[in-house]
View 1: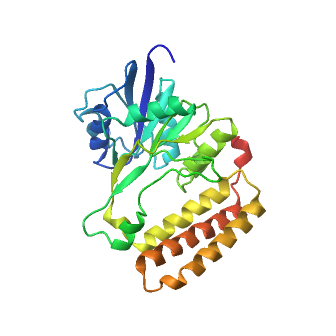
View 2: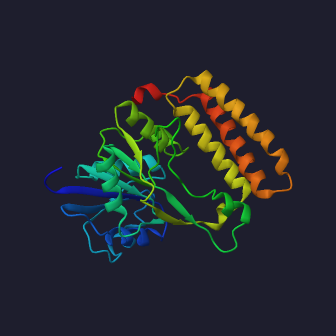
View 3: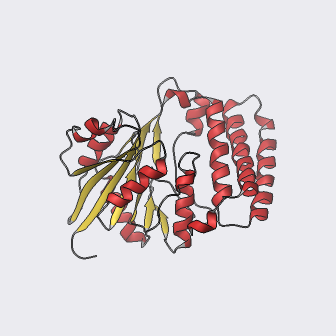
Length: 290
């Protein structure tokens, strides 16, 4: 590409003081030549509670604050896309921080791969007292995945992409799965995806998430979202994931006295059970969104 490249970094926030550190990490980016950044922060609270934290963060860069109520993450993400003016947009969560080379690394991966969107890992930072069976499995990191050698969908916690015309489904903005659905639809529109393993961001883990029940609920929901939005045959997806759920459940048996292995295979079974549920339930109105 020739000429200056303008990237809007988007952060959606809801009552988190950590958004200040996220903003400062974006402001500290060391950029490639001819790349400029602007930050767009969408506040998803009923009242503009984050306005002071955003506009007085001390970050020395252009910042646009948008009040995008209320309590629906799709509304906030769509507000970011509406406010973005660059040809490219990046997303970072409000409880994450990025190293100074984050944007430069994503940009290099985007150019080298020829993709329209590149996803990076969001690595969990665990407290010292986190259970060993959680840290060994690294359950709370968010890592981009390939299936069958292809990247089908992705996440908004660490992504750089060409600014899309599509928007996030507001009917999924409270239940979850809106980003999985969004990138599936982008893929059907011809967007090419790639993974940038080197573009790592970090998230300090909320201690309330260090529980088996929370992890099981999350895994089931992730599976349900995938099953409901994946552009695959419903019945084949149900049958395949059902077999994987049973297989994973059986694999727990040799690990009944090994919490690490038991959790790994047990939560894997829960995920595939969620896929089965989502495949049966489908995604209401999915075709209307492209």
